[in-house]
Length: 117
Image (tube, rainbow, N blue to C red; front, side, top):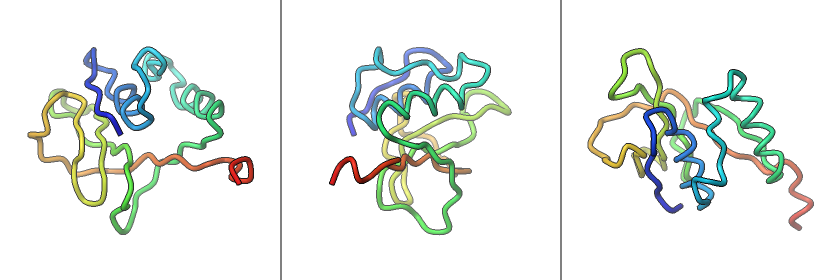
């Protein structure tokens, strides 16, 4: 995981995905700009043999996730951050000063594991 900060007010998910997969921001779409952004995310993940799944864990995950949290800047909006275990790892706003409570976690599952064995 190589932290990247968001470039615009609404590209936190893009920055988190670029961070998590260690990709340049230019290689990650700005999913939220699309009305059906979830389908865009699914199609992009398909290229990497991945399936994105949004989950509410009962125990902390011991791996990186993209957590959905309340936006610290905009009422009634959501924000994406990198999370691991029970703590914030990276906030693409460029600060880790906010106290977030994740609502859910986006995890990425390998679609066809046999391709890698």
